[in-house]
Length: 453
Image (spheres, one colour):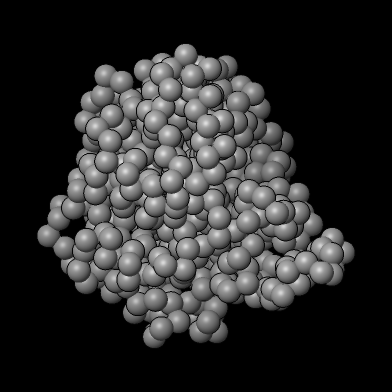
């Protein structure tokens, strides 16, 4: 698993070439007029919308990247009946061995380990005892691992974001369609208790016609970004050479579910602006020794990025990113409609005509009637597990879809659209916050309403 710095050998051209598609490259933001990035891409491959998994009596999973996040999700997979870990990959052999010991401690056979460099996942995916390849690598490797897995006949799932460019987004879409393999973005926040309860209320019409939403990743990562291990080895680098909304999906994924994105609506265009950069420079002044090579870095990413998304049906979404200022954790997670509003952190509701006047009601008032069926069924098992239980619900639901041959809740079009705000916000910023069109990754397939379990 690549856990070191970005690999300069992985050019955008290499990524598209590895996907095996011709003419898929989009205009890279900044190369020319950014609005042209939404030009349609033609293909003869059928859509993956509504395509179910084939049924599996057991689910065999390989993990590429066994660091903090990979080992955390490994714990969740090992807790599930009928799920087996057959192979592990990491460029740090000790991490792979440690994860392998977790597998055997759970009573499963020792998995095969792949630790021979950054591209050893390319050998792993060719095994015939894998149904699903999950990657928890640094961001630049998400697309290459997923493409390699799908081309080898495996379904793929990736940590977030699924891609960091429009080229990568399209490469994932085309590879999924041409191989008939799914590529899921493993967005755990879609399976959090509050988000699933609110989605249940939305689908029952409690907020009326939805008009506006707020989504964010607001998290003080200054200490983490300067660490000399784990994510500190690579996650600071984009702050030195790119701008925009780096990490949109934790907030945007649940909101996309509320708004039925790709199920009757889609993201149409985006406008973005950022504040000046201050947070990393100030942190370095007070926490980093003057002889550190980190003092040779210059930071260009603004501390707070605010982007507005307009959907095809006219709804608006505020999308924020702020990881370099002192702040409590927040994903905003808010929805407004013609009959009421939900706001999170803390969770509170106001519904038109409610008793008690213009005051918010706590989430406890709604749990009895609107707790999602998955949380009703699995809540006790999820209690105390990763990220408040959402990791367990995500893993359990993935396994259920694979075992029962169900259509996955999240598909490659979601992975592409939820990841696209990074390059699109970058393009908007470079052109004076001008509107930038979203590509229609579904090529019209978003217009058909469809349900989600």
